[in-house]
Length: 371
Image (tube, rainbow, N blue to C red; front, side, top):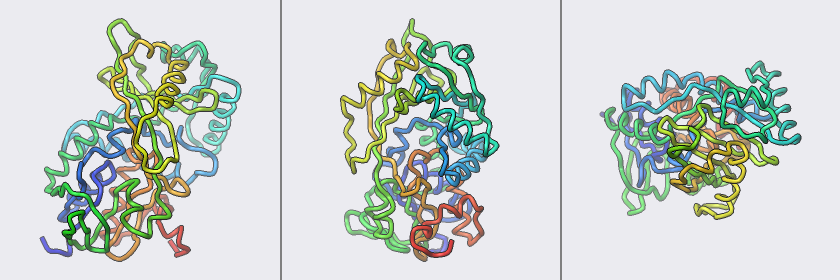
């Protein structure tokens, strides 16, 4: 295939792999540059596909983009199952719960905001919540049921994407990128990978690879715990449970095999990926108030990942220079936004117009150019 159809994707996380798979299926020659494909921040994600319960007044663009991608997820998951493996999509919805009056107030603000936008969020009493999820503790006062929010097994997703990419002819260059230029990627050993277009999808490290992104992309540390139910303990819930415990957010995301993912801290500490004892203590303490039965679970993994934050919580999807596209800055929503980001990159390569929700994520919004 000619050089004019050659694309290099820098980054082998959920965004990079989704982009590579879509671009290869669109008929391009694709290489992915990443020293450890699949093992980025998305390997450590909770797996929530939750634009509604993640939303907040002032972030309407984030909700619109997330909702458009959520609508694409069932088809995306079906195609991926056929191409690479089952990503473990769960359709049971999300419960957002509160434990004190301030937390109830936070949920009321969210519910009012969502009602104003025509989004579905159903108030539930404590009794109703426990009827839905018997393991919910007595300290939970009320909540919202958001049936439209979904969840996915992030590690099954990444494994399936990696397989789908390879089956679609994507080549993997297992090396670190040192710097990015339009049409070329310089590797750590000073060799160069040339192409027609580079797609920079290196998550939190994107700002280190191109000066235009340095002020726009920052690392946001998130620590997660993985637990597993044991014989005699209450089973994991069937739905994702998001809570505010004395105004601290915590989420619990079930897996089909009896595993439970617990997070998430958000810390602005640069590229520090250490797990602190205090974070583990706080997450377990808060989660136990929501779901007391987890005290009997096995703690199987502690880890920290670096999300890629942007100044306004919208990702950066668009052209930075001829021959250089970016797809980064997805913050908490990398898994959620994978389908819409992949479709957007294909459209950009083809010179097609983007939907309004995606146009809002153009990096030009920070440079004063017209979008």
